[in-house]
Image 1: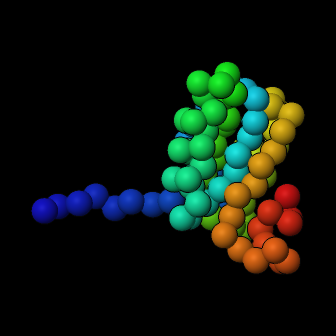
Image 2: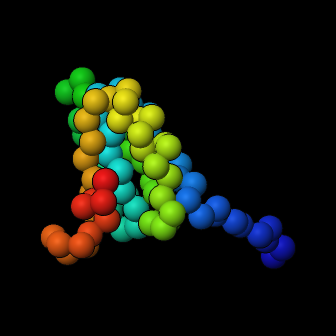
Length: 90
């Protein structure tokens, strides 16, 4: 089958789920877990915004900052080591 090219721009994240109470930033294998957690929080009245970074360098600082300004809270979920992980840079 003819499949169109698919490009993901470096440094451009995407908002997977909109929310107002918490910003969750993730990428890769942890992203589906974050979406599932956000959906589980919704019945409790907690609307979590989930951002997929899609690239780590550069990352979409503008998208993250705008979301955190709105929600006032940030949770970074990654599968890295405790030291020198991506979340440490946020």
